[in-house]
Length: 196
Image 1 (cartoon, one colour):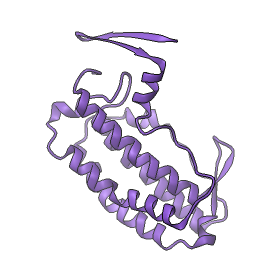
Image 2: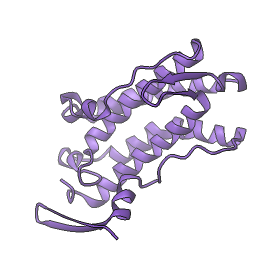
Image 3: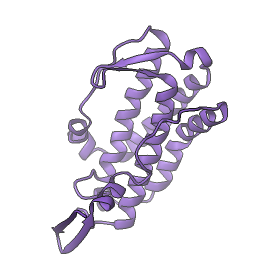
């Protein structure tokens, strides 16, 4: 089995490939279920609705130095994770609205890593993105809640993956995305500055 040795600061860490994947995907990788019930769909919309308050609760009392904790080696800081969620969810909201109002529009991809390394992602107060997420998710959930079965089949075209994405798929993907990055914040807090 592949093992990788990492040495940084005064902390040495020996990890197996499976451990590295577990740190990267603490909630597991995204998998779209084959069969979807109305109850499952509602539960995913609720995850999206609840995300800003759960995130705020996780980061509310963090001191400035704690915002620089990383969730894994080579991973983003807590500050970058929060700003990334705002960036990503703005794009997801726009894709939702485009698919709802146009016929299979082509969406604009963006470089997540480049966005995470701009000054506003690395230095801006987290409160700005927490506040943005609170308002954004209220509007997004209001929009998602009005979609009927036909609307949920509406699509946008993703040019990188060369595929049509349904609004149902988007809902499941971003519910996972919420839990994925919430787990990253929790992980960063747990391991403190061991990955800095």
